[in-house]
Image: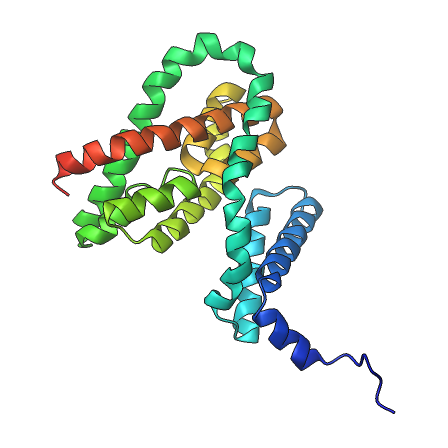
Length: 244
């Protein structure tokens, strides 16, 4: 007799492809493997869990010929949690609130200046290399955290999906190379390192800073939030000055 509950791999995989569970389970499993690899390699910068997870997810999708649309049914559920996760970074910042008063003025100068440099270089580098205006608008908000850069890119007339890729790419590269470059430049104070990481590499860099030093991570979270706010305020002004 045929078992009533016989396992049917093909039917199970077909069901998963039509279910949000595929994206959720694949993303969580890939990130868990990434964390294990990162720990096993002595926390080497090149084995950032996010980078490892991206490679693993991409490999599985290619090997199984699963489209991004099928994966994103569940991936979008996790993307929705980026907002609450960003807000949760206020917890370590609150624990370092006693440092903020004397650093408020430097932050109010450094963050807007950094946003002006980031947006300007992103926009004009594309134009100078022959890219069209839409691609330049896609590149401009790359330094803001992913949920913010997606909205800003779409509102400005850029390609929101490509902005997300650029934002995550910048975050990964900065998280891998940023601490090494700051050490090379003899930037050792945790406040300065945290602000630099949060302003440039947003959530991915902030998670790296939190793992390295709680105080540095708190200021990375602050810089990430301020950079997102300053980008939202200054981007339309800068694009108007650029004639875009």
